[in-house]
Amino acid sequence: MSEQDRGVDAAGPRGGRATHREPAPGESTRHRLTVVSGPSGVGKSSVVGELRRLCPDIFFSVSVTTRPARAGEVDGEHYHFVDRPTFEDLVRRGELLEHAEFAGNRYGTPRAPVERMLDAGRPAVLEIELNGARQVRAAMPEARLVMLLPPSWEELVGRLTGRGTERDEAVQARLTEAERELAAAGEFDTHVVNADVRAAARELLSLVTGRNTACDETEHSQ
Ligand code: 5GP
Image 1 (cartoon, protein in one colour):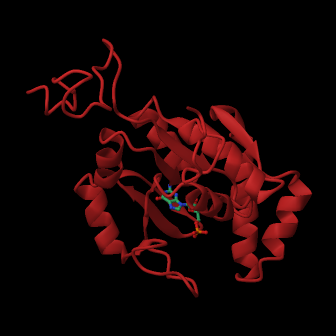
Image 2: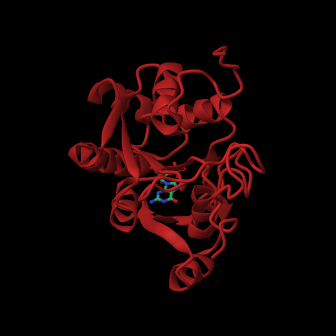
């Protein structure tokens, strides 16, 4: 493999791609994957949406799911909506980094785009449930697992029952799942409490990118 292929600047600091430097032995240019998990109703989508607004440079994986699209959801943007045989085919072909069943539907992360982004040194974020997070931990031990927590259990129950988009049994299934997910908080590297969406997103931003300011805000250090 050539120096070029490894993304190393063979020309040194004065020539070629001067922003690249030779990695130290054992150091990789590959970025670390961040997994954001947490119980349904905790506000994962809102916090991750705010993180996306703060830093469009981050790659946000688009999952595959057998769940029908909700009003306003766009295929290829919020999810890739597929039928079960198509999903099972993806599993069989090893094209999913992780996959899980949640409240009667299947969800999975397409492997190739995530690997491509990380290899290119770009931060990548997955927003997935607990079983998927565990599979990522096993497949990529270096991944950072972040659990988003509600300020309290009562607050979470209020958010889930007040959503008004689902039948009672579906809400009950999500509460049962939520209890199971919260019980696994100890398996995560970091916890972020979502009392305020913007504050939680900023906390995530600094975990994912090491920045405290939005990615398009100029840092005035000379
Ligand atoms: P929803 O149906 O509300 O969009 O998502 C239900 C749950 O599935 C959420 O906890 C969400 O984070 C999770 N989820 C979404 N995409 C994936 C995925 O690709 N893999 C796994 N394991 N969970 C996912």
